[in-house]
Image (cartoon, rainbow, N blue to C red; front, side, top):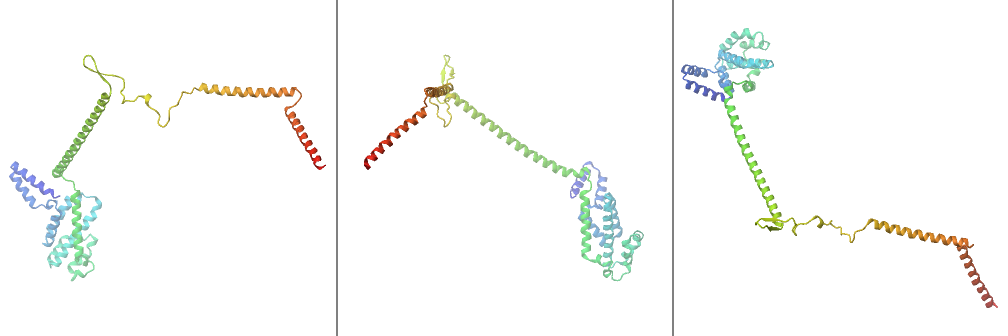
Length: 330
């Protein structure tokens, strides 16, 4: 909420620009008596400590009533317990400071003015004995409030509580002027950066397109230069459809690793060879059958005939051997 001071300066400048002198005087006086201290938490805590140490019970109650009316009453219901505890702790702190400063009259004034309000609260029942206690710092009910740890914890809790409220409270439109101006400036810078990136990307695309078209044109010109050129009668170049020696046709392409055949093989030629070989085998088989039938018709068997002939040859050999044997033994 530090920008509130900046907005106060803008309003003051506007009032001077319009020439509202009386309004300017009232505005300056109210700024001096501002209880919110331009919503600066450190200034509010400083004001509370100043009122406590000055034993200004009326000013302390007025400042807390202002905070309650402008801030605390707008909170949700479950924060009421925390607000009440902070208020009671600030009042107890006021009594501790008055006792350490030997301001017994301020202690008496405190209970005189606030007894009708505090008598109904259970946590204050023992504190009504505080003005009559000789050594309250040693009493079990009051000793904790005399410690520095308790006092520092109270101030830190109050500081955090007010800081949270000031950050979450709704603000007027004029209070958002600076933040919205910073946001607009940031968005403009981001837009400028994005535009520059977009321009660089478009330039790169144009460069790539120009490079691609140039290479395509060079390929086309190379292809044209490879073709045969002839001049016509009127001096124009005539391109022939006959491919150059550097260009290959489909007929010139050969499969990789497969040698071309020596001759063209006709499937019907293979079938004819197979039919001829089958016919020769059938003819040989028929001749064998005819000879077998002829032998059967003549009354003899070629197999038996061969067996008898072999038997006669064996007999002749055995006879000769026998005669020779007899001749030798004789």
